[in-house]
Image (tube, rainbow, N blue to C red; front, side, top):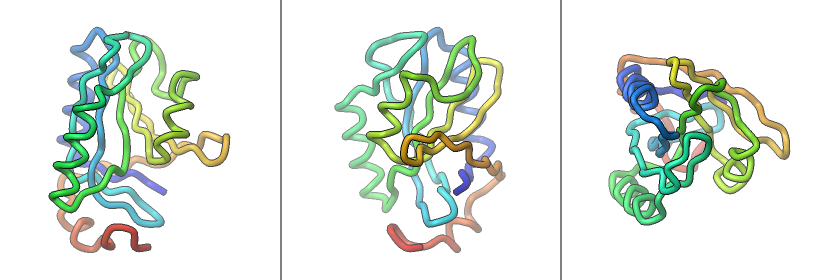
Length: 148
């Protein structure tokens, strides 16, 4: 599994993390297959607890974002959030969410670093992040939702 994301989208996430005093969070929407999660769109969601050390997405915004994405033929391929003043790797706070949302988790820090992870059983595994200028080619070649 690898995560493919446009440089522009990654930059937006990192910029928001650098400017925020709390953890930012949101969805990565696109298409996934057996080998990759291809990000077509990102959607910031309000961190309803407003914490610098944890996040919880605002439920109504989550539902609205997913509904809008599905109308466009997209699915949740990942979740992103930031860590302030600590490295971009899953914390103890992240593991329950990773169990509930078995997708790629992109974590950025306020220094511009980023890493992506999946949870396999109880083991966290880092996945490569492929940065591209455009996802048009990968998007057109990618399988339809649910196909490998």
